[in-house]
Figure 1 (tube, rainbow, N blue to C red):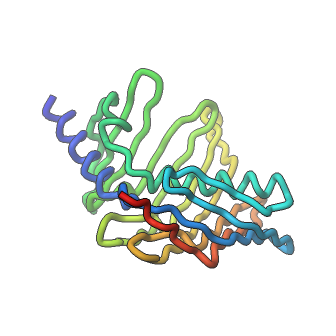
Figure 2: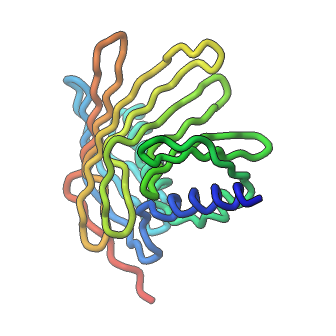
Amino acid sequence: MTTQITARELFQTAYESRYTWNEKFPGYSADVKLMQGAEVCTGKIRINRDLTVEVTEVPNEEVKAGIYTQLRDLVNHRQPTSFEKSYGQYEFSLGQTDDDGTVEICVSDDSTSSAYKIRNNEVVCVTRVMGKTVFVIDTHKSLDTGCGYVATNYSAIFRDSKTDEIKSVLKFEDTYEKIGDYYLMTKQVITEDIAGEEHATEFSYPNIKLMEAASV
């Protein structure tokens, strides 16, 4: 029982050390430009106060869907969800501790299990099995906002869960700027290794404007 409580507390501290937008978050609008090789697509986006996402004026439906998915992922990480709501039903156990103090924590319920590595109250590695795929996400750099950390340089490796064959390797570089009281993503570069060649996709969000705060 002591081991479970200790592992739970370590994971909860790291979870609650993430940077999230607070309850006063007003939402914002921006232009969007997606560059992939010689292809350039532009449009407009809104992340509303209720954290719904809108993508408009993007003529290519596939590109529009890609931008929407990227922004939904961003919102999921910045959304302030309580630890109990996200992980209250899970069991926690301690794994190995590395020489640099990195602690492995295994998290599981009746249907899923994941392994996390935590260092300096920050999740620096996630390993998870999803169906026939195993993915590992390693954080290489993060931004300390003063109100929590944000991963800014990280990689993801996807493998076949049975053969261990690498299916995809992605690298992410995220740029955040403080606009008003909030740190907002202004650019994300995703580099995919395909047959030994790197292919980059860049999302950029110029002209960010916070919306009017809701009246109380």
